[in-house]
Length: 183
Image (tube, rainbow, N blue to C red; front, side, top):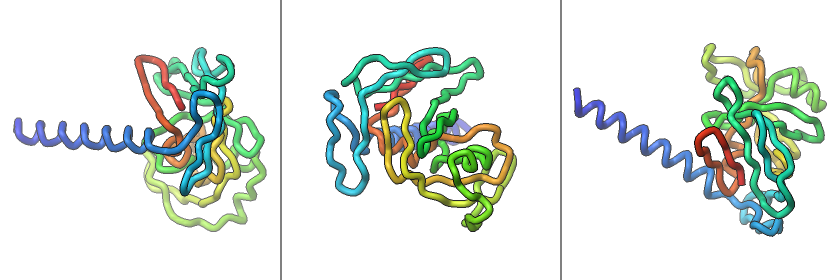
């Protein structure tokens, strides 16, 4: 029994290190706000920071960091700008891609009915149809990522998810206490 517990703990630790490595290896912005070149991915823009009750605000130019405070429900939410439309998203490092609700997808001008169903998404409520799309830009308080893979989920998720197709392209995603920092 103890051996199984130790093995499970090692697997969980390895998975956590792997996710942290993904989140910290992508190209981004240096502290001066200057874009760094990316060999295979677009560079990120920067220069803003965030703070507040589950929201964000400007901290000053050149910081290249966004700080998001944990909301009352213990989750982190980011006010994103997706293709020019403001959408509040739950930051979900366990989601492979940015997952849009049908309502949010339609708000940014996606004709959901014209998108073919490309697979299924595994959610807490079971498997649901998924429609793939590429977003021109996803931005959180000045940190923009171009050409972001996303999925429109045909289920009542309630909130869109800011997943790894955005997060893994940042320089770092860190959580310390009740503050998440994106760089």
